[in-house]
Length: 407
Image (cartoon, rainbow, N blue to C red; front, top):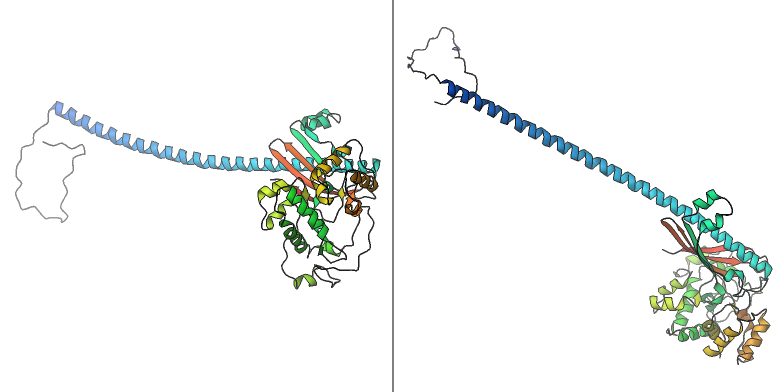
């Protein structure tokens, strides 16, 4: 006989009052369970209730674990985003501090250039104080004399850098001359010098004329084309009225860069560095790296400093001068630097160069443009910056021309 753990049901009364069942009730004999069977029945009922409670408790524990895991994931995500934001703010702070240190170092080098111009006016040579590079040095070594607190702040900051004479390189701006404001024409002599430099470096010499055309086209919308020609001594030279072939035009306007530019063709971007040569078809990154130590791009036409120029550039600028003669010329100036252009002419004649091949206008013993290479390492932040600085030949004051950060 099958037993149930539920309570026995009560007999239900009829829904209609007074209605009596008509069928006969079949008599049945109920078997009375024994004591052992009753105990087993009670045990089975208790076991089923315990299993049901255990299942309910297990489901509750799993639900609680899921809620805890989900909460942990959300909280960890919030903490991670907060940590990333804090790290980003710290990096910005460190980078800003490194940039300010680099700015202070730049002001210091500008002071060196100005003091150098005051002590040795009119002469720039490799033996000057500006030519001494600064190795990687801890900032606390400079701040140690100011105070221990500032020295501790600069313990994790390092400085290094050097000053380079920009006029010791071949200036690609010289490929285009300006006989009058707003007029740009190709300089045949400078194109020939650039061709000789390309040949000595193993680069295709046909790129010289293409480079000159690119420089002229990039200057067609530059504001500097309306400026008068300025010599290296600081005086303003009179504009030559003769406008030769290759000029972009002889018309002038009182609104430069507005009305006249609307009718002109689209010009390329103005060249600001050696990397701009990649815009010219024929140049490759390997060629650029080969030309970088000997070529630069300056805002104005400049003369070559014969006290600091390399033998490759001197041999290219001076027609008829061999590479060996240029190397001997460079070796002779290591003992005695040149004080004026006359000393340069005498040294060139001594090297076998004819007098007709010497153009004093393309040579100088002083420089106005300098490249300042600085590197600041402040904890995790690093600033590698190259700044072009102009030093006035008369007042020796300096100003920043452009700044380029190396990525």
